[in-house]
Length: 242
Length: 254
Image (cartoon, rainbow over the protein chains, first blue to last red):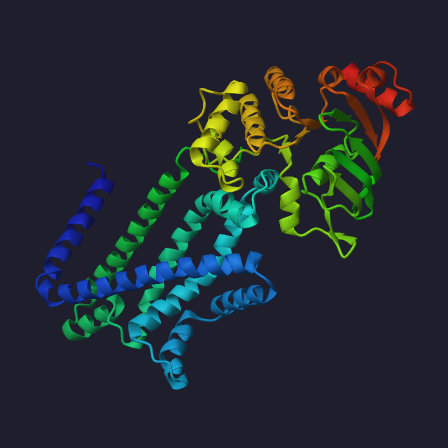
């Protein structure tokens, strides 16, 4: 047996042994981490939904709205892209109550992260729409379609396909930024990990496991987006319009 | 049917069309020829409202296309007015511009349903009829991606006609095609010319087709109609030197 295989096998065996040894007594921290995972998933889903809605509204407003609306959309995009997500989170959670608006931690989290990612998403939507060839717009004019109709039936369906991969990136970005919410009293995965760590001192297992959980969710997002792309593409090959 | 009156188009310092006057009678078939950069495609694009005009007025069926009457004067038309006038005009493009995410049938029913408000069944009946006419009755469920260039262009022709325009514009519709596919598209146009009461303006490099099909040929040079007349005259006995040069160069190239 070549040396390389021996070394690899040894490492794997050692790692497996370590895992088995370490996870003895896992019932101490696993349930807590799973609860945290569920919270993290909820915030990610809620934030993603809000991000998509905000991004489409902001992009369309910026591209086709009348001047004041356009200006408002630009403000939203620049403010939420140009400031830190953590500060936005703090602002919604700690400053808004002083102005008389109190949001639950969950609401603050979804709102801050969703709007933050939505601001980046607006640029993705805009890029997708601009990426559809001018020829397609001209065809809609020649068929006497109104602009909203052309956008809805001809341009957006094509733009949508090009938007899927960058949206995948943004969703993963969103997932990772959910760890910030542990700082506004939400017991998400990261928060739970710290809590369990302080209680059990099983630092290696806990943070390795947390790493793997984040990775798992992010891979799930990646596969989901690929499936979506396959479905959306259907019979069309991307890029070249006919 | 269509009248250009003193129409001028500039791109920056470059004057693409210079004070153009052109009058096209109902059901007349006008071929527009000329060297590239002579402004011939711009004529069609302005008529289709794809380009703004800088000066002059275009009339379609007696109504100003780009301007509307307001307080006795003409002002630049708004979107609503533009749409009401350009419904009379259809256009076929050099690069087909089919909707890649829709089937052949859907390409041809989308605008009739959503713009003209036809019921789906009626729009489909009309589309199928046209697609059969251009020889694509067996491709209804196909996506454009899977068609040849000639087939795509015939779908584009059917799609434009499904809107029942009075004026059809053909912008170098065979230029992007492989040579062996040119004939099928020209045949489709020939047939439709007989079948429908259409006014046609076509920018073309197919001199043979222009000669046989058109009632009138306009030779464009430097943003003006340099010479015009019936095809026999333009092709057999052009009077002006530029026209002669252009035709001999084109015919020599085959």
